[in-house]
Every structure is written in structure tokens, then in C-alpha cells.
Image 1 (cartoon, rainbow, N blue to C red):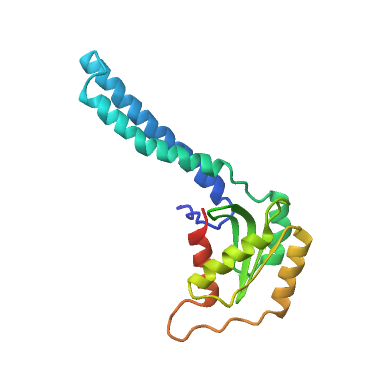
Image 2: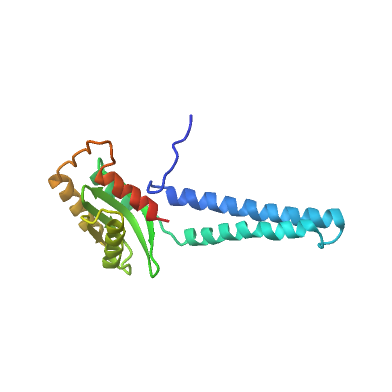
Length: 197
């Protein structure tokens, strides 16, 4: 039986991505060191062509290590918070563990829901700038032709859950596009996945 591929925005994506990045980094460094060792073993000196190949092989390994360091700073949604949100978000297009980066700041959005033109998110870190995240997202949506989005970020879980339940009660179903184009919600979700780490 094949396992379902974990996509960006799915719960568990960050931990899976961290493990895969760590394995890739280890393999790339091991490969470079193995080539370097083979060069010394075959010639008795490190002054050979395989040393150059090993050093050049460290470039992708170092890039992978830098990505791993960035991923290690990311925190996932706690199981307790997810268990409280999941029943309320059932049937709503939602994303988990998004890491949104700008030139100045990084925003760790643990849960985000898109309902039509409404986008709400849960940023549990009290030091995070919810208004800055809203402005960044509004800018991203505007640049991609979706300027009518109403974005609201919450630091407190009860307020996020209340707003989510309110949107589910009052939100009208989004009309399906007639020409086979993706809906506003689908476009918004695709953009959020694209701009997340």
C-alpha cells in the first residue's frame, strides 16, 4: 500500500521535511568525504583530482545544511492546539505549519483557513507581529491579482476558533467558476503554499 505524499501545508510536513533534509545533508557530506578518502587511498596523497571533486561536492552539501538550519528553527503546531482546531476546521480548506518569510521578518503561522475571500491564521508566538503578517499577505495577494482578500491573524487560540466557527456559520459557498478555472479559495491556497518555506 502506497503512503500518501505529504504536501506543504499538511500537518507533519515540517517534521517530514526536516528528516528528509537531514538525511540528504548527511548523504551529500558522506559522499564528499568518501570521494576524498578514495583519492587519498588510491594515490597516497590529497593532491589529486578526486580532492577537487570532493571539495566541489561540498557545495551542494553546504547548501543542504543551510536549508536544514533554517528548517530547524521552524516550530510545528502542538498536538493540543491541533486537536482543538481540527473539529472546528472540518470541511474548511486549511493549512498547517506555514513559515512565511519576508526580507525583514519570518512569520510562523501554525494554522490558516481560507473561506472565499476570508483568510484567518493562528500565530501563537506572542512576539510575532500579526499586523505585519497581514500586510505581507495582503501584498502577496494583491501582486497575484487577489486584492479583495480579508486577512486576519490571531494570537489567541479561542479567538481564532471563534472566528473560524463564525465564518463557517455565516460564510456562503463560493460559486464554482464556469470555465474550469480554479476558484478563489484554490488560488489562495496555492499561493500560500508557494510563498511558504
